[in-house]
Length: 445
Image (cartoon, rainbow, N blue to C red; front, side):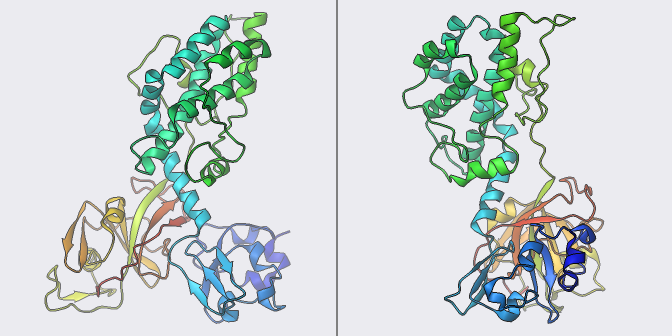
């Protein structure tokens, strides 16, 4: 059942301009997609169709009630998710996303860093006596070990790469879990996929402190929700199909099921999301390189890290303006270069947020009026100014602000809209992931 047909009055409250790229006419009645809404009074917020049509207690019998108009005790995060506090009478809007959205964004960063962690994962395996003992024991125990070893090593490198990526994103000097425990957990997963008559002798090569991969989280000392978020994004921490892959290889080796061409039966690993290894300066005989050339990494939507500044109306600048400007704020007759000079500073951004961003969005009236590149920054007593140049032909210009928060400054990630090169990849669709901001107020720019 379409939301449009079942709840026509609520359907009319969908925001006419902010749900860019969403086919509102086909939204199902129980959709969990976060959309923009605007009540008759003019309040704007994000919510799902399922939540909008629910008969929540705070609505007091009116399913079309606006959260702002009723104003129960409620906390609304910048991601649109909320927490109701019936015991409170206050209505608060927070500039940072909720814990679940922050974990999801953190997991996106881990997956972004996954490919770059492959070389480090290979070095960890090469230097590990536990891995050498396990593979050596297997080679002496299983006569067809060399045939399944590419799959085995691919699995080890895949899982170690996740921990290397976690350490990279969290700026850890070492892995978040002892190497022996991590490799031991991988070994137990491999043994589960092997025939029963091979397991007993190989168990002696598993470290005593071996960890365990649970169904919803990775072993280790980090946020337990990361494992669940990885699974939700399509990365299977258990790698469940591994059993079938090894079983088919073992059956072929034991029963000598040669094909007409004498080749091994193919294994479909296209959706297994292993890191790409073709760039590694490594060609260990019998290793995983030849096997992994046919794998592909998880394909994530294009993502751009950006900062956003909101300009007020045009006004005279302070007498001692750090950038030597005579006026600040937005005016429609300004050229892109003039607007860039007014929008690039001076702001109380955190320097690491600016350094991590590739573009700056200059917004007026909840609409992007200019996009600029970021090549550096200059520090001033009142904050910092961004170095770069305006990009007057950028496809985001004229679109609604994708990093909408109550704070005039924002730092976040835009996904599915524009590739890193600035080309439009999926016209009209923006999925913002705003991040936590420094609580400092902006300067009068």
